[in-house]
Length: 170
Image 1 (cartoon, rainbow, N blue to C red):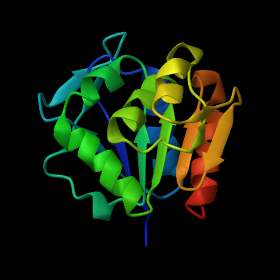
Image 2 (cartoon, rainbow, N blue to C red):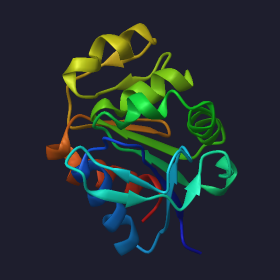
Image 3 (cartoon, rainbow, N blue to C red):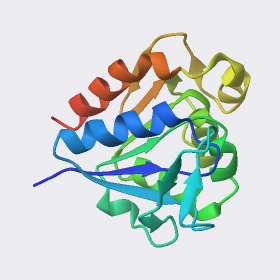
């Protein structure tokens, strides 16, 4: 049975951090859903590249996903303003799904309240936010702490995706 993966989206997402995992997980045989806040059908990236929502966070059931991937860019700042999006991340994590965040996506992890006592990485500019949320910050290309996976920048995408695939047993 195919693993079910949610990739979160909102306006101003990072193109690489969304599309690289999107196609990588389809290639691996996963069933990929694009989960948005429901504010629109299509969300523009930082460069204007559109990504179409397949389901809103309000309609998505956290129990149906084996993994939730959160791309960076400025999108996480919009995502964390939506209670249903934050709840999706929190509940997927609580249920044991892989929750993976890259770059600025650590903001969503902080808003979901799942960082206390966790070892993580991110884009260096949000280090203080993660530390203030109770995380131990390290500067590494990918960090796996239980079912939480974090990476820093688009340059880390190969290691990020390999770590997620390994956690999914693929």
